[in-house]
Amino acid sequence: MSRLFVGNIPHACNDSDLQTWFEQQGYAVDSVQIIRDRITGHSRGFGFVQLKSAPDVKGIIERLNGQRLAGRVLTVGEAVPKAPQSRIA
Image (cartoon, rainbow, N blue to C red; front, side, top):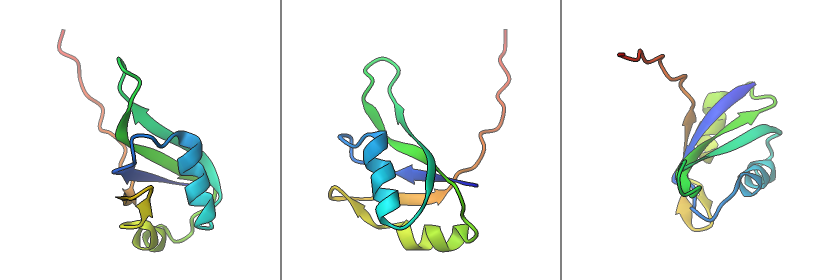
């Protein structure tokens, strides 16, 4: 499975909309998570898509990066795991 970062997502778009868009592009989606503001619940304009099978991640990124969803040009890239942050007490 491959996890993709998707940026510049339309604010009216929900997880289901993004999953449907990826499936229309021909990809089997395992999960979608659009990141939301903790206080307002509004989309922050980016999220992550976990694909069930992605043998050619670079090819997928090249194909989807720059495509439009609801009038916005998406930024698609490989998700990079966040480095652990230490908390100073």
